[in-house]
Length: 122
Image 1 (cartoon, rainbow, N blue to C red):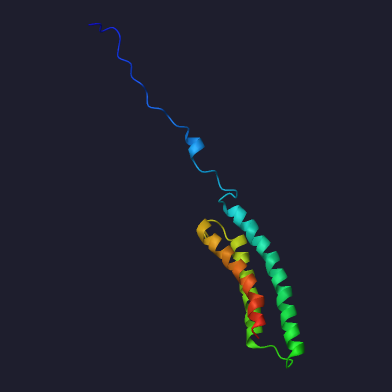
Image 2 (image 1 turned 180 degrees about the vertical axis):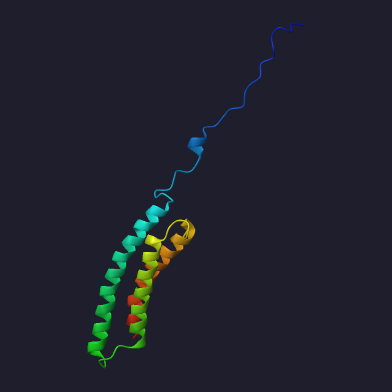
């Protein structure tokens, strides 16, 4: 028996983990990126304000000359959307963590979309 040579052992094949993992998301998960999205939402709210004013003026001129409750609710939605956008853009990370900031920005955009729709109900 020859004890000077050890039996050959094969090492298990290693796979390249970088090739099997999913690619990184296109947008970074940071509060700074969400702050910029919230500031962009203020522009969307301004465009929504223009659309809401057009809807309310058309309804007021073509109808009985008064602004109804639904039109007021549309303007309230715009005001609340502006407030949520400012909170998302200005609040520090300690007060508003990433997940909460993400939900606040989503609420801001939802209010911007729903405001003219509510005003159309008048």
